[in-house]
Image (cartoon, rainbow, N blue to C red; front, top):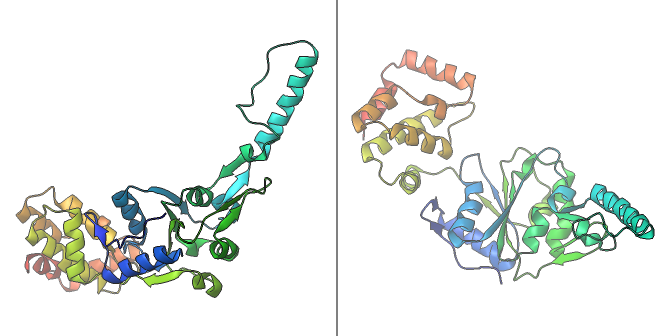
Length: 304
């Protein structure tokens, strides 16, 4: 039976109570958990950290603009099947000529169609109920992709191509399925109806401090506070792409190589800003802000 314990996070992941409840509900009901929110808020990390913490097998499908159900579930290897069919004909001819040696098909038989099915992450996860299946950034998929998943999500089964074999799990044994979306496009209503829904709001400062300590437990308090002062100020400047949790963690990872005073000075000078800012437009906007307020970020790096 799949794990349905109330998981509330790990040494590396802060799982807020509402997210923990939604995740628990999804696993108890045997439904996927659909998580939306802006990039860098820990949507993907939930699946990774849960699987790692619980020591579970994890299967990942990174969604793209050309994603389809065949890639996600399983495909039939027609090339290998044709090649093995030709080998079997050649072996028959060799046998008729009295030759003992045979060409190998690697133990496969063309009479056993399941030998030629290449399982995708979905079929693998459904074959291992006590596992985790991550469908990452489903909003990047063609419109028909989430619609094509409706049958499988409703009936908890996949039908293998060509062979007709069925991989099916019960509600109790459903793998923990986590689906993430950055809301680049709206998902079909029917699809969302088959999921437990949760929206991750951007962390407040207290939560962000907790997240930072999970990843950088030995970091000085002054450096943490200075980083957050600057980080949240940058987010308030109306940037094209505001820095996310991932960015402040990377910035602090870089800053930890300096002594506390040096790190604070460098933060005030926005040293390592490439870890936080990702567009030319935003860099130019920050530079203009500094021209108007030359000491703004330096003051924030020194205030507690």
